[in-house]
Length: 450
Image 1 (cartoon, one colour):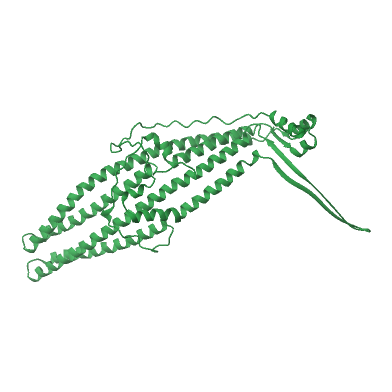
Image 2 (cartoon, rainbow, N blue to C red; image 1 turned 90 degrees about the vertical axis):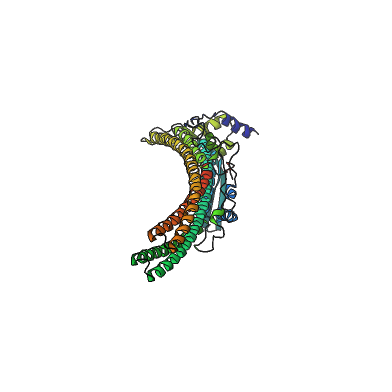
């Protein structure tokens, strides 16, 4: 009991001094409202299963599969485990170190062999005079959280990439369908022109032009077939599978629902974006590193616990403490350089944090702007497609009767193809903008560490 009191007394005499600067979240100019008028303020965060709002059973399956098998996510999970181990190492100096020192000798003499064994426990403890060890521990914990938030941010990117890749694939399949239908129309017109050419009603120029249209239509279709295959391969890699392992089709492009979504106030992004939280954790760790660098200028006290137990009297305690007290005197600028580096690193991360948050605001506004304009384009192009289809049908009927020339038919033929492709592109832009808006708002992410 006496030994215990002596050690406790020695520890209590050494009151730690905290050299870590007080942390303050950097001030960033934050808008009170969103600039885009379409962003109606919501009281709740984005649904964690936001992708289900598109009404696609196939997309639901792809997202689930990517969260399990995506290689980048698997690697990020291992980086979290590495950071967890590093955090454990960073906090180790707060605990005593205990070891065993042994001696073994084997001698031979005239009377026979002789063996001698001895051993003793060695225990020591570094008194955290300036809170450097606690700062290292806390910095390790902050970096662990940073790796967790980095993983979560990557998870949002993967879900967004899978969604966009799937919509891109469906868009290409729809354009392939349009190209196939266009090729059939061009072939049909080609047959009409050849009949009229045989009858002397049109010139060889009309035949040559339509043959050019026919060859171009075939080449465009072949290109789209290639692009569909490449899109399937890209989606397979996101899912962690070899290319062409399975088909990802089964839904019609225009069956995708267009969810209506709102956003919380801009200030909510400070807590709702994992990349913003990750940047702040890096900054907190760097702030703690300044305390560690400052503590390096001051004495270190290493106590031999086994020596204290052997001589627990006050004189023995003082002698044991004094004999292990070290004070840095000249380090050739190493300590000054370490402190300057820690302070400059902290200042750098302040700017990175501000840029990350400003970029988050921009991404929300960009996605909202594309959503609004793509919605209007889509509505206008739906009317354009209806009118282009009607114009083509009327011109085809009148061409068969010889009421219009070939150039008029060719113009309406091309206009229909252009309008249909533009409609697909506008709808794909809208779907992608919705996905990017979900991602920019945090995608229903929860800051709960797991």
